[in-house]
View 1 (tube, helix red, strand yellow):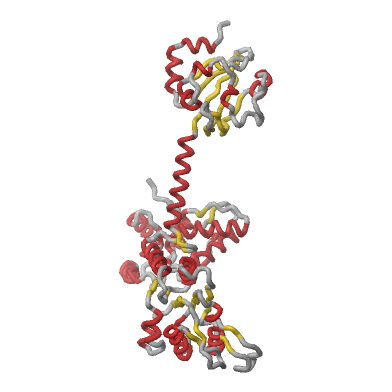
View 2 (spheres, rainbow, N blue to C red):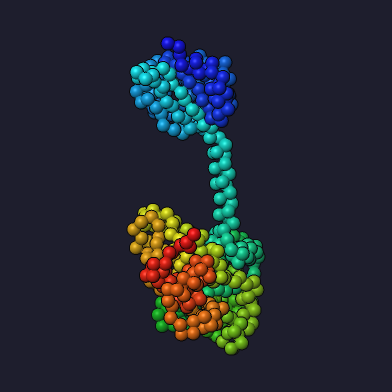
Length: 468
């Protein structure tokens, strides 16, 4: 019987078909000798057809073939027992000596009576794909770098401005005032400035000014001498001295008393301190970064904060926007905290379902990033699948009404649209059509939470997604 592969070689149509295939294809007889070799194999391996035909597939030196090297006797090859090799990623040894990443697929060809007549192998070159993956990884790293500064995350325009301000602050020796609501990450900004500055090898000392009484804060900052007050049983070095050469971060600076304000002003003006109970002046070399969630200028106008200290502190001001004003960053932050809690808990949560993400996007976040992290941690406690769902979220998020502090623009529209009217199925359906099925917008218009709209839709059998 004439060899089928020789018949194929002599068939002009089949030859043209093999030549047009982008993947490498070659065939072997029952003795393991190569009997056909398409042009793509020449390009992938470097061997032209006349070099390859008549030789064994050992010339390709596949790194993976039944988990062992090719046997000297081809009849011992595992392909005859297995009958096939499913697509397998491995390396091919190019004629020039370098390795080529490929996917190899092998099939034994049999007659109708089951006797083997040969083998066909297909080889896909992964070089371009791997190069593309590498470029994508590099691009992802560059994008990640654009969305991060130290431990601060954000791609919004507002956060890009913050990143630029941090870089400028780190390059200077000026006193920095960081302003922003609680939970926006003021301490992270101070850490980033310090770690990028010339003082990064020296200490960064953090003091929460609102956590201590006036006398304790004075001792904490300036230190004290033995016997300076009841309980002062030994000399104590203050935080300013401990940070010599480095940075002191004074959090909640708006809470300090007038007496501490005077002492702090002297530190900023003269770079010197006196320990409590001591008259000796000690020179210090520190940089001060202060932070507050209060309007210091308003406190100055109310005569609760010294004007001269205010201007000493605000040499360079960095304003951290609240989360509700940079909602583009919410998906980034959600993914970031999911990654952190996966590591901490050993869970493998892959992400968040769209209805839950809509709640994240619609919620006003009075507690800012800190509250968002706590919401993710809460979800990790309840989530039993690999995706965070609506009912994994804290109750206050699912049932939140939109507070007028955060949505002043909707206050008037709510009154105008719903002066004592009760929501009914027909009106809800009309509003959904009017808002293009944006349930968050509907919720704002009727003065309810998005979760409430979602429940009404289920109750009244209204499709959750826009019907086509």
